[in-house]
Amino acid sequence: MTIIPALLAIASLPLADLASAERVLGAYIFQRHGDRTAKALPPAKLTDLGYNQEYMSGNFFHQRYISASSQNHIDGISSSVVSLAQVSASAPQDTVIQLSGQAFLQGLYPPIGSAANETLRNGSVIYSPMSGYQLIPMADVQSGTGSEDNTWLQSTSECSNAEVSSNDYYYSSSYQKLLSSTSALYQSLASDLNNTVSTSGLSFKNAFTIWDLLNVASIHNASASIPSDQVMQELLVLANTHEFNLAYNSSESIRSVAGMTLAGEVLTALNQTITSGGKSKLTMQFGAYASFLAYFGLAGLTNNVEFTGMPVYASSMTWELVTNASGTGIPAVSDINVRFLFHNGTSIDGSTQLQAYPLFGQSEVEIPWTQFVDSTNKFAITSQSQWCQVCGNSTGICSSSSDSTTNTPSSDSSSHGMSLAVAGVIGAMVTLGVLAVLTALILLVFNLRLVRKSVLAPVGRGSEASITPVPSKAA
Image (cartoon, rainbow, N blue to C red; front, side):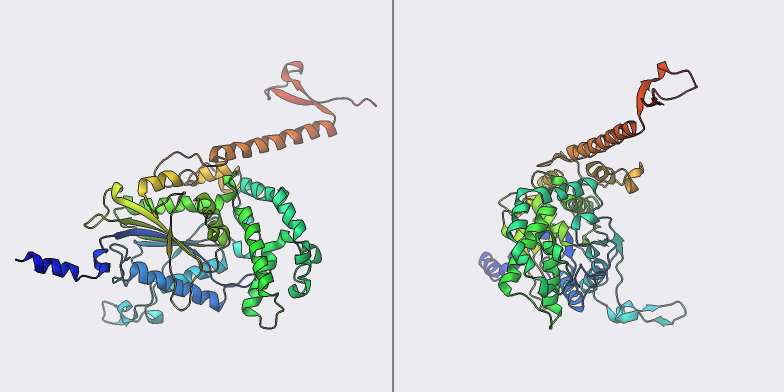
């Protein structure tokens, strides 16, 4: 009988081959920059260590998504020579982050040697520079510009309502309690900081700045005075607490505007992979820790303590589109799932690992595409007009009627905590309130009053109410 040999042949296959039915259709990577100099001493610079971290991270993702021999190879992606129609990258206008992105892309698609040489019609050969160095352009993103030269994460978002929400943390009882209880600890660090922070600035209010200065010194400055490991760990915990509370609040989703924007960009890119029939395959964005923290909170990941602190340099978040449907190309939407993976940091020895985590409080690490869309749309910002509305902004890019609406699946836009619409209304009401107060002050200072137009002598067309001077009592 021929059945037995066939069964024996199947049994002899490696388990990896049996599991290879899964196909990765596309992916989105959000990558933190590499090691840098201290933010409190601008301009911050990417270090050689940081460059190495990012290059190795890019090489890791080459092995995962680009290499033809990888089980996680993205279906149909070019494995040696980059196809710019298949990949896209973006970063804010920030030196540390943009250089990190360039280093990452060098590792993702390394030089291809003589294969990049070009022969002209006349027979002459043009030898490609730098052994066939592959160029991948990076687009600009608005959020995060200058973030590594600014110690307060929200100031780079340019979102008015988010700044107000983050500032509210400084009036909370939890903040005031830590400000008081840690006073002695921070004052004891004066000599270690060598006057880089004023005496009045040695407090929990500058928890990140203080920890960052000492952390950078502990990596790069052999002659620096560094507190004990126990104190450094305590300072890290305090810095994590400080920055997480500035980036996320369960009652005010607008505080996580960086994560809301990122969620919209992820949704748009993955949806483009599906609607383009798989022509768009891999999207990468490079940024800072604030976007990680904000997304962690919004996506319901913070029950795990790992997601309540700043990810270390060169950390990665990845969203994969996967399917078990046979064949090639994009299957039916009902056959597509999303898998979220995270790695806290990288390793120059190539041991980087990604671990899958369930999103939105689910128990499974894979979530159906339609469910991912519905859950993400509850907090994602997917257009410029939506951003302007929820941020309460009316100047700059929000002063124009133009709208950069993105192509994302529609869904209910309500969010847990403060809804996006409510955030926009609050911003408008605050503006109207300020105008009302200013008007009242002008009337009081200049002894003016509002009267109806009907009581004035006709002087041509005008508004329904006019301001007329009132004689002073002393006159």
